[in-house]
Length: 65
Image (spheres, rainbow, N blue to C red):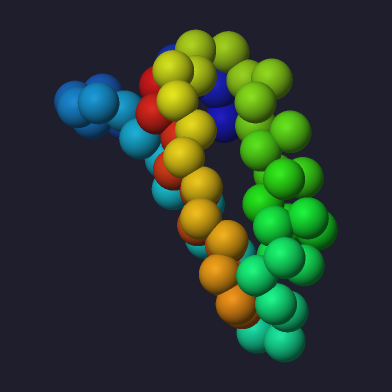
């Protein structure tokens, strides 16, 4: 979704991506999920910050525009 299509009024505009991968360890989540998503999202226009956390069974990525 282009940044211009985000709902107005978000202060600051933040999108959160959560991925559950129940059987995976934190290092696997980081390598196979979190880093891959960060690489793809990192090229989007208007991103100010990407903050992520890889844990056993899940990845959480916060993107601030």
